[in-house]
Amino acid sequence: MSFKNFSAAAEKKVNMTKNLSDESDVRAATAPFQAEFPYERDEEAQVTRREFCNFLGLTSAALFVGAAGFATKAALDARESISLPTARIDGAETLAPNNSLNFSYPTERDSAILVRTADGAYHAYGQKCTHLSCPVYYSRDHQRLECPCHEGAFDAASGAVLYGPPPRALDVIEVETRDGQVWATGRNSSGANNGG
Image (tube, rainbow, N blue to C red):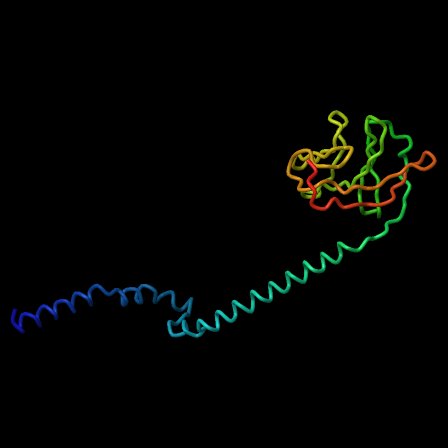
């Protein structure tokens, strides 16, 4: 192959490479949108890799410290025992077996339910379902507490989850009988116990 033929072949390859490059086509196609989205290729290198990694590391550390702070506060708050007032449950003494009564405890905003089981024992619970806080009700036919929102059920004697989506048992309200009257004396959160 002579030098003349070689240079003609090289020139042909260069021309083919120019034709294969679509850089000018892309720029021409995106030109109308550049006015609406003014992003220059030179601005792409404004944030260096080191700056980005520093930002990512600092942001992650800040989120971790914040989450650790909230977890610490929750753990400290869980240790505190709050003494609740003793309150008489009006109408409980006339409640027939296998029936329930709604009341408020420890404040007027906290709904609760008192259940008198078929054996005559009194059991009280916070009325909010532990799944999504729908109010539970006592089903006399099934002798259990039921949540109408997502079909969860709780044992009437213990508050434990029988089935459904609730992640833990109902909050138990301690009750005692004094001189024929029923009193609420405290409230215990069931924590993460499933019980069922």
